[in-house]
Amino acid sequence: MKTNIKLLALFTMGLLLFSCSQEELNKEIETTLTPDYSLSKRGNTSTLTNWSFDNLTGWEDATQVGNPNYYIENGHLNIFTNPNTWERTKIKTTTTYSTGTYTWRIFVPAIGEGDMASIGAFLYNNDTHELDFEIGYGKQIIRNELNAATDDLLVYMTSQANPFQSYATKIKRNQWHTFSMELTLNSSRKYQVNWRINDILASTVQLSYGSKTKFKIFCSLENLTFIGEHIPKTQNYALFDFVEYNNK
Image 1 (cartoon, one colour):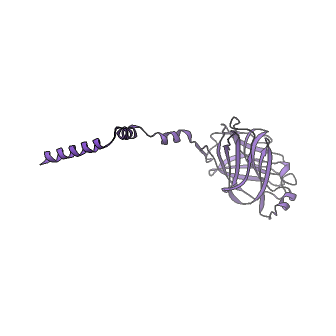
Image 2 (image 1 turned 45 degrees about the horizontal axis):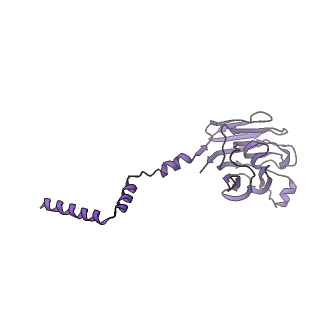
């Protein structure tokens, strides 16, 4: 009985194979035998790098004026500047990057009223190829234009050149905020930049240069004249929780 069942099964399979065209069989074989590399290809081209600031591996000092005023504490980068100085404290990545999304999570404190102090999260190649988030108290005339409340700080989103563009908005102080820049290429292979604050699109610009220009990532606190009314009267600081780069 078992032999008869096996013969019947083989006969049925033969009929099925005979009923298929050679073209269909070839296609089926090709589908079966051809490996799917899509996942490995995606894995090879996608890069996610996260710096959680348990240490400063992958970063180097970039301070321009004064001492390197920063340290790691409880998984945060604490960066500060002193009062009555023009200190410019900065760190930068040791590697350069191009297209992708850059994200900084920052605790933005109550910067001294009128202090010329700027928390920076930015990309830098040179002075004409620089893309910024700059956060500070701001000039009173700009605060008035934006109807800023006493617990608001200003955020400037700036392309320093090629072309120059700067747009200001306001955020609440004494809170964690997420700042991101998305760099993509248009049909002419030039950078398109989108600035987002807490995942909300805040500004955009089309640049005149593309991915041959690569950037280092910066975290900073600088005492700069453009963003306040007087030399800082207090010690200002910022906490960086993490920085992330994703080229996907």
